[in-house]
Amino acid sequence: MIYEVRTYDIKPRSLAEVEKRFGEMYEKRKKYSELAAFWHTEIGPLNQILHVWGYKDLEERARIRAAAVKDKAWPPAIGEFIVKQQSDIYIPLAISPPLKPGKMGPYFEMRTYTYAYADESGDTGYEFDAGSSRYFVLGILFPEKPEQKKLS
Image (tube, rainbow, N blue to C red; front, side, top):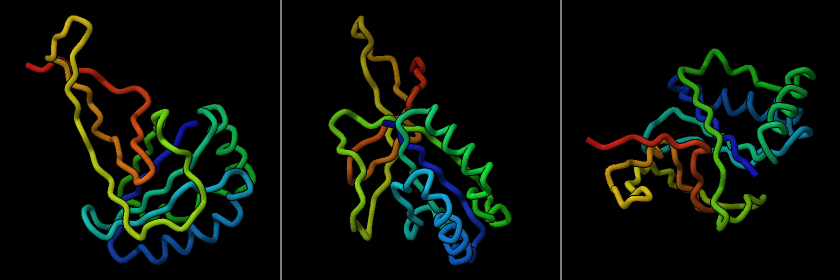
């Protein structure tokens, strides 16, 4: 299982229209795959929406996205409001329970961490860059291919 976390920075005062258009297109899009989560920020970086899609693997993601675009079921017409977009693929820890439909929240906390670890020789001069890791109430998800860099 993988999760695609898409973060959009949007223009101020556009949230209501963005959510409206997203919701209208989602009615067509959900026949291809269900949305795992959708949030907008209230504290921290404002004017952001985040949506999370679960897929079996990258091949399923590519197939579903291509079919939805071909059938004009996706994406929603929100390009005029997007200032910045980021898409990350996450692999959940084995102990993370799967995302399931339900009433959760209304608050979630997303965090970013950088971890230090020792290599096989015990050298602790390496850093695990998890700069885009996000903490969910349901568990911790990590980037698929973290970068390693030697600390000076």
